[in-house]
Length: 322
Image (cartoon, rainbow, N blue to C red; front, side):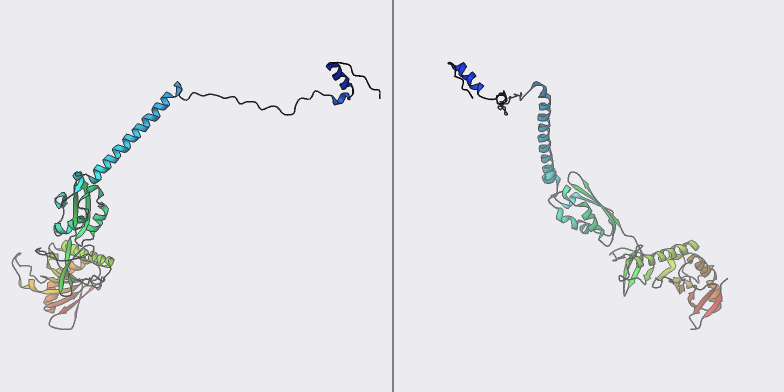
């Protein structure tokens, strides 16, 4: 290859050097990587005029929250600890409905609430404690602001004397056995065949039979229950009653004692249908006594017949029912 003599000068030197390289090797390629551009900084206004309503609402809600929390704290502190809300003495407890249960007995559960706010008194707990008292059937306990309580009792109503051994207690319609209160003049038949060992449900069922019997005999002849002195409920299928005055003559003057009034007769009434059986008894007893003499007991629990046991003989006389 012939050499070309370089021309003098810078331009000539470059042109001469380019002639020594192949054309495809001489390109105008751009660089592969671009230089990093400087990020454009965007400035935002922190408090623009358009945002002022939002800021005012936020500040307003914050102030209201602080005021509300402060007021609530002050109110709770007043209600729970202010002397005006404290239960300080028993005069602040109003009591009504008690006749047998003493006021001291009712106030006993509230001793734990003394010097506490009435709002801290557990009303349901105190009500339950009062209803555990034997003579209390139900109770209500209410707050009377600022610092009083109101207690209302419903006492149990006894409907019979209950003979337990040699002692007489009382029993209500639900079969709850009650102590006899002092100084109370009560007039009831004496019931036997019920004890504390008997389940409450069984006692209540037997007292329902008792009530049915008392109601039925008074329907036949008003005031007949006053002549029932004792009722045996040991066997619910055979109620036995001791009754006086069955032999009273038709000509006897009301209110004047009759010789037959003192005669006590034991009558077996079975387990029901007391109205018809008692009517049969009062309508026929005088005739039965005239035929059999002094009657000790009458058994009405059998269908279409009556068994009469006189005092003078151990044998039984059977009379057909009319």
